[in-house]
Amino acid sequence: MAREIELAGYLKQVFGEAFRVQALPAAAVREVPLFLRTAFRFARATLMGRTFLLAMEPDGVRTATPTEYAKHAEALRTAMGLPVAMVLKPVPTHVRNRLVHQGVPFVVPGRQMFLPFLALDLREQDNRPIRGAGTTLTGAAQAVLLGHLLGKSVEDVPLADVADAFGYSAMMLSKIATELAAAGLATAAREGRTRRLRFAEARPDLWARALPLLASPVRLQLWVRQWAGKNVRKVAAGLTALERYTDIADDRVPTYAMTRADLRNAIANGVIVACEDADEAVATVEGWRYDPAVLATEDRADRLSLYLALRDTADERVQKELRTLVESTWFSPPT
Image 1 (cartoon, rainbow, N blue to C red):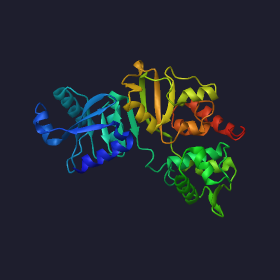
Image 2: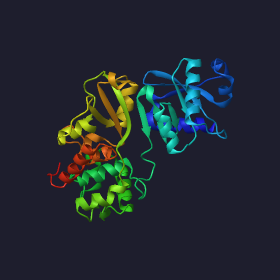
Image 3: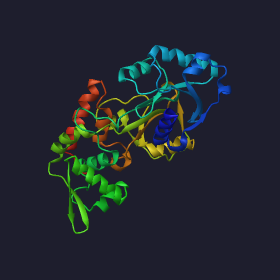
Image 4: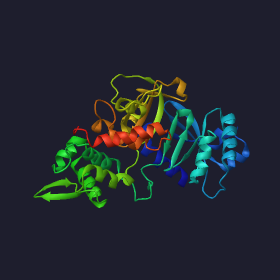
């Protein structure tokens, strides 16, 4: 049961109530080969209107090779007539990379979810140390810090006013101030009953100090075949946003960003219809760990979040434009 509990918590964290899972009795999987029935426990899952099989690997069993997992998934798909995702215990990153390369759908709770039949590739970002320097800031703390770096009214402003501007509660802003102070990025000065954030360094120096603690805002990405509503709250992101700042060419399929909560709701309510194939897609949608609209300029993602989202891109042309993008931030008027 430990695997099921861990899986349920992970799915609820990512998708809220949009992801439905139903355990399957032995009678429902009688067409599955006996060796697989003894090796896995099974559940039926529904997401984005698509039903598929979850094959849960219990604790204490030998970890298979990526090739073996691929064979298991194909045998299960043939027997059940449904797409299959293997639910695995933690495995090394190189194993997960091989599973992705071979196109094997899988979930490692808390680490990665690769469901190519839903165009989903959600990887650990919030929970891992990056670039060897501490842990990442929470999404809320990162958003407030970036707001200051972008020249918004954050420094020496009552925390209650900052909370209103970012859509956070006063209690959340107090936690953010404590987090930024603990990271050595700001101090939370108190004047009477009012607390204010103060930053000791100039913006370029503060950015350099904070960079090892900043993560990509993107937590979820999928292809979209149809928008059922025209008033979806979103901003241009990815290469679509980078094209509006630089001379880089956009992809054929535009990219947009919204909060993970908005994306989950849009999926659950049928406002966004996802697809499996990029050739069918009219857009790519990213679910961010903070609201991209709060920092956006003219309906495009802000420069610094865009850098963080694209900094691992291999294309040297993109890297060159990203460096220019960051440098231009310090010479732009406050937004």
